[in-house]
Amino acid sequence: MNTRMLPRELSISWLREMYQNNVWSPEEVVNEIINRAAEDAEMNIWITPPSMKMIQPYLDRLKLLDKGQAPLWGIPFAIKDNIDLAHVPTTAGCPDFEYTPTEHATVVERLIEAGAIPVGKANLDQFATGLVGVRSPYGETKNALRGELISGGSSSGSAVAVARGHAAFALGTDTAGSGRVPAALNRLVGYKPTLGAWSTKGVVPACAGLDCVSVLAHSLEDALAVDAVARGVDHANPWSRSFPAPTPALPRKIYLPKEPLNFFGTFANEYSQAWDLAVERLKKLGIPVEYTDTSKLSQTSALLYDGPFVAERWAGLGDFVEAHPGSALPVTERILRSGATTDYSAASLFKAWHTLQAHKLEVRSWLADAVLILPTCAGTWTLQEVRNNPITANSAMGLYTNHCNLLDLCAVAVPAEDAAPNTPFGITMFALAENEALICGAAACFADSSANLAGVDLTTELKPVSRDMVPVAVCGLHMRGYPLEKQMKEFGARFVRDAATAAKYQMIKLPTDPAKPGLIRKEQGGASIRLELWEMPTDRFGAFAAAIPAPLGIGKIELLDGVEVPGFICEAYAAAEAVDITSYGGWRNAVEAV
Image 1 (cartoon, rainbow, N blue to C red):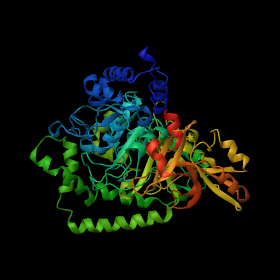
Image 2: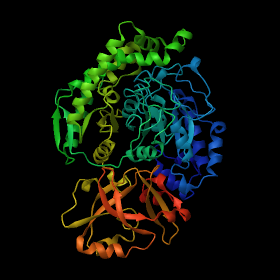
Image 3: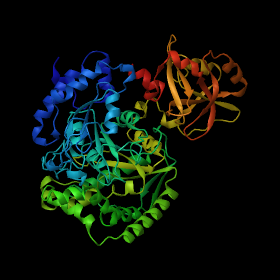
């Protein structure tokens, strides 16, 4: 095996195929990753770099896992070094802060349980305080494509590790853009789920009430595969909230800023032109575009670093800074200490809070079924430019990102056309907390990658069910591309759109030939399952339902939007002799994983 043939762009689907066909083994992939990390050592990607000593226990564990029950089996991933990996030091980018946890952060635990392989702890802007990727005593992380440019931060090492082929995906954190900015500057997708959808237990806090674990990957498909495993309520985490996994859907409208945008840096003109090209591309998606005043977003952003909310950073790290003088970088300590100023009182905090609530209300009024799209970054800098002007350069990077978590929005950063050769440019799509499906659908449509999203057909997502027809939710062999699709058509049925159940269902794999799934409603502990919505003539529906063999049948299925429709269900007794495949989120994913 010539290990040099391993592609730089590692994807989950490619690795699955290679493992399934015995072309590559996880051990061989890891060995190549270790070699790549050594070759790229001067790029300052890692704090704890990949080593076989650290990774071997996770490779050994794969032998105990059933590939069919481990959706991320053998997939290598990087971990930002403010997220705990058991028995490996966590530094948060500060040597004197270092501690060695005895257990994994919740999201890391979930990924490992799904078969993913942690390969190392990635560099970051110290204490996740920065958007440039240079504020680390472990070295300035260089951009994956142009070494003289910044990598972006604070999840700098996480982004460059993925872009350089050291991992298929990486965990970052994103409080004010720390996952999206480095994704954009290294031509990656940066997915920032809704606050609380992923647990932050085991994450060193920056602003605990606004912190979010995020994922950086080469595609939205890979990001959503990680999301399907990492998402879920953590009762040990006070910031955890319940939000179902998103099923991509198109928004009713795209909002763009009506006011002129500000671009900065050496490539300001190129970035402006790249934004114009992205706008023209957005207008061709077939989704209505409307321009709106986004000036309130900058007012919201100012609350984070120019108002009393910055005190939350001091609340989390002030005791350490006071007890360890000189341990933090001067620029980091300056930012942290700004939260300790007597200029901010309890009254000023409540005033800011009330202002923020008014901004949230305004945003909810116009973003209910739409996505807002902005440049992820309005420019970039050389490493030397940031050294010369660290505060101003860093602040500029958050121009279009800082507002997100304050307003309780979800976001996904996706690549657009490069601004200049090897100088990536990207856009970010924002939606309300409960509307992650809309940013996923719009992003997939923009990237022309809807065919890779587990069969989601975005062109039909909004088509309504016709009158005099019965909606039928199908989740297995009757879906498009499977053997019994022809039976649907024989009964006069036609496909309407992709959909998903409410987060109340278990999916099992029945011991039949051929194998087929069963959908069982759960009183608690269920998940959202992807399926298809068809429509069938009313006068044919009765005969169709009567022909379905036990333990399957037709019952009412609750969809993600709360609507109940007739669809395939399974008797609960069948679960005793079946395999639970709920974690795959749908039959297509389960079949592809085998």
